[in-house]
Image (cartoon, one colour):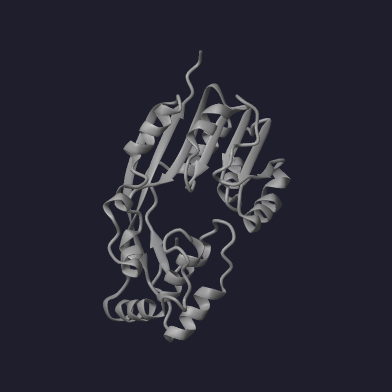
Length: 264
């Protein structure tokens, strides 16, 4: 997300603006001037570019609109011989195909919770940025022995300040979901060796209610079933709070995980 001081305007005008913005893909440039989010120190996309340069076959899971993979391939000193991406949401499949086809990347329609449509040991590198839920047994299956999974995951209690503003206090189980220790255990149970695991909490600021509306429409799992009509009282209250007190502050959780499939 960008930096700035938000927009002035009536509640109705700002909400209408947040509703009008398309939600396809993972391009967050619209948030410039409306919201900020600190970035993890490890620089995922640049690090992915370095790893892509050193492999022959690569798979990017849940690629969204393909923006991160496209950036990484553009930065890589050498592209893999074969790169494939998967995505499950039809609007993103179309966007990713248009973006990645010129780089020779095939985008395969695959639901996030289904078995991967690839042979055992097909890839040297499997990557993913913010998967809904990593399918560890399938990741392990499609990796070649000695191959690696390189990913940035959303961690526990990510942006929960905003989620709880709309949904109220969440359960202890919801607070512990996506914990990096749990993901380490799941990866190891699938036969992978976790060789790097780093976690950070990062400051987010929302400068106007249009940014909140667009964020909740785009990141649909934050407040499931979110619509402006269903949450108008909370939105109106938050709009007034931002106008009187300044940006609404939340914190994202991110972790970098690198896991290797042992050689026989």
